[in-house]
Length: 92
Image (tube, rainbow, N blue to C red; front, side, top):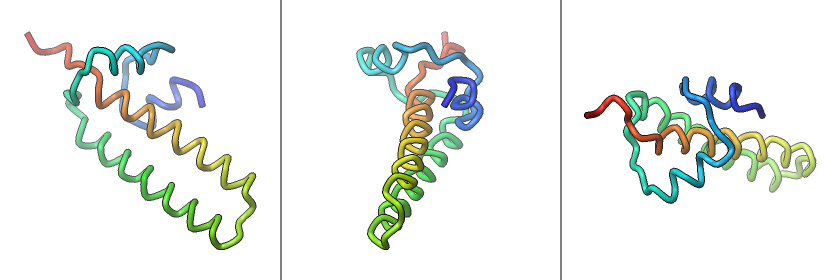
C-alpha cells in the first residue's frame, strides 16, 4: 500500500516518511491530531475486520487470501496509528 493511499484512508494530509513510525515511538508522542477521533474509529474498524478475518480462517477460508486481507488491514492500522501519534504542530 502506498503512503498516499494510507494517508487517504486515515485522513492524514502530511507525508509518511519511512522512519516516521520509529521516530514517533522514540519521541513517545501522544495522540494530538484534530481528526484523532475519526482516526481512532478507523483503527477500531481495522480491529473489527481482523477479528472477522480470523473467524473466516476458522471457518475454512483460503489462508492465502485471508493473509492478504490481514496484511492490508494491518498496514492500514499501522498508518492510522502513526497519524494518531503525530505531534500537533499547531500548538505553541
